[in-house]
Image (tube, rainbow, N blue to C red; front, side, top):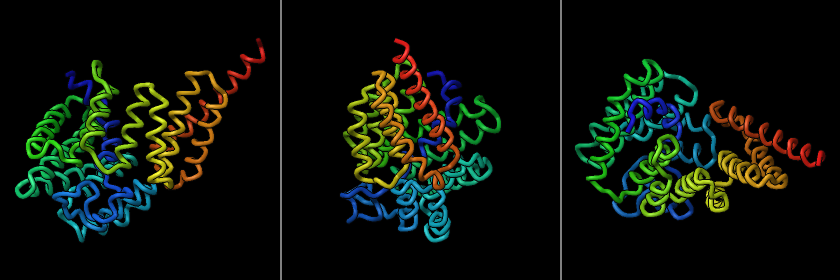
Length: 307
């Protein structure tokens, strides 16, 4: 593996890892409010942390999630996932010092947790080093972050030793597999799909991840099916409309189809209606893809008129 190349992508990884690290409710998990991942051996993640995740990943409201996270930091100080999410939000705002602060808090709490819960302790040691690596990359460049990448894989391996079938671990590792497949040669999203389908939870994030994987495999019909499943569970999240718009855009471009591209525009427009709750990190590429789709439609119309 070319570690320097991989580290050069770490900023991109961090944004998606924030998704992979998230907890959200699915229709089947209401009875286990504190741990949407697990039916057996559930953990007490904390109501304020959970509220923040629901706000962020069910409603897609990045800014609305901040207040419950502040409360969680006081009332649920031993939950590493809360600090992970604060760090990830800071990344989307390019607030590097806040990212660093909460990466360090993630590591500190995860180190303590490892003594009583080796699975989640090692999992969030991996996540914490990943976030810290993103900070180092932004400040010092890729070479300084290589050691952090090695630690990420070390602690992921330790978490897998504790329980290789754990849903939380496999959700996060599934997104990591997906990102590696996008950015490294000789990798494939198929491994991520297998991990998602076999072990990961909750369903909302699983369906979203599988939709992204099939999108990257250019299997757009299947990608749409899983995007629709994610929309069914969390229909208020504008990122789901964005994802479905992306898939339709790619399909329409592949088939040179104005009707499909117009459907993509509809979903992009639905997402943009809620842009006030999304960071610029997401809004900027969303608007760019909408403009690209409009240009593609105009190009097809012009080519048709000239025939």
